[in-house]
Image 1 (cartoon, rainbow, N blue to C red):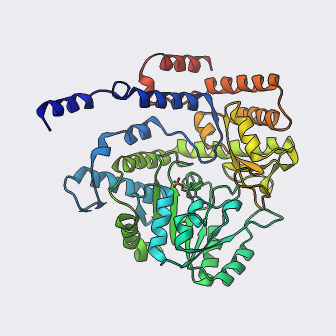
Image 2: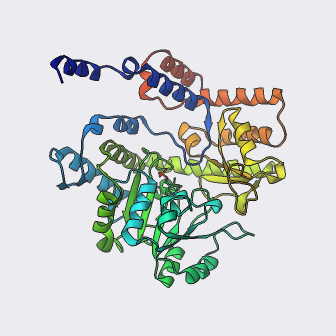
Image 3: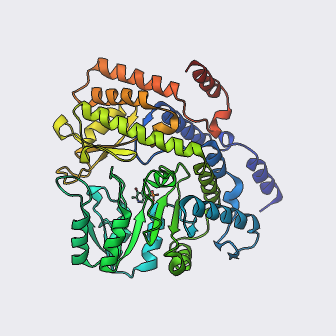
Amino acid sequence: MSFSQDKTQLENSGSSLDSIDPEVFEIINREHQRQKENIELIASANFVSRAVLEATGSILTNKVAEGYPGRRYFSGCENIDELENLAIARAKELFGAAHANLEPYTGSQANHAVYLTVLKPGDRILGMDLGHGGHLSHGARFTMTGKHYDCHFYQVAPDTERLDYDQILAQAKDIRPKLIIAGASSYPRIIDFQRFREIADEVGAYLLADIAHISGLVAAGLHPSPVPHAHFVTTSTQKTMRGPRSGIILLGEHSAPEFARKIDSAVFPGVQGAVHVHAIAAKAVMLKEAMSPSFVAYQRQNLENSRILAEDLMARGFRLVSGGTDNHLMLLDLTEKGITGKEAEDRLASVRITVNKNLLPYDSQKPSVCSGIRIGTSATTTRGLGSKEMHCLADLIDKMLSSEPTVNIITKVRDEVSRLCRLYPHIDSIYDHNGDRFALESQYQLQS
Ligand SMILES: *Cc1c(COP(=O)(O)O)cnc(C)c1O
């Protein structure tokens, strides 16, 4: 490389995204605008703090590090070691764990590392059926897990639409899995991890508790923790934890002595390469935030919002799977309203309310259509919406789904969504430093 090329690169490295790559800059800005103007009710979504955003976008992305603190394959890792140790210590403290691995790139990767730790190809897994609330990474046929292992599934009971632990035990005795997975993406009720461990013990299986959706509630002490019970606990960090798109693995005191080193080598070099150092920093910040009283207050409000929205919707004639919710999400069965999940998703999207169509237990529709939608309150709660606004959202959802909305109604709902979005601005982002938009947001804050 010539000196002049080198110089150009250095100059470019000092320029901002808008001058280097206006196309990408513009797309990010449009996405920022979309996030500001939409009511986000996708249950797995959330908004990170500016501090988490800063850590994610920091120069840490430049550092290559493989292995673990004190056991690296590259030099120059002294700061990174300190950072990862800090993140590990915080994770252990927050969740009462004896061992924590902060390196998984996502929740799915964390699960793959657990599989690699205790399973051989062809071994049997018993997890929750995808259509009943389970997750793709728990063994869906067309995934790597589904292809490498012999995956079986439990379902919710047809009458209660809740987990039936006696039934799961009977199935486990029948199937004799090496690993049982407890945890879900669309299950609105408390999960009894202690009971799951008893079932695992009865059949000689390991237990993985995947708390991707509920980890924020667990951290806040608002959902029973699986850490004392499950051999392995995995989570995503971008959902109720309000962190970067990433993952964590936790081991309790009872399982750390046997599995700490094994799980670490399963993550690296087992299923991953070099550490995403910027994500480790963002997770450390997330964990610090999660230790504060305001995080607990946030999760309490999240649960309160979810309960209010669920009750309001039921009062308006919507059937909720299992008759309600104990957590941050609910499943609406739209069969009696005469529309499909797909149609409902589209109708709500047209007024800038974002949800996802979702299969219901024993659904007769295809996965691309679905009979229901899933709604979660984590993101809107972060944005500041409270009980009053949940009553309002229930009304808007009802107006859009209970009958074919007229043009007049659509306009009214859209206006109301805009009003809510202005009243509760999107948290400011690193893209807000320039110009008008920031001023506009300050104005909204003054008005509210
Ligand atoms: C979201 C989720 C995951 C992991 O998702 P990633 O996108 O890989 O972080 C794993 N398990 C469950 C139950 C989930 O809901």
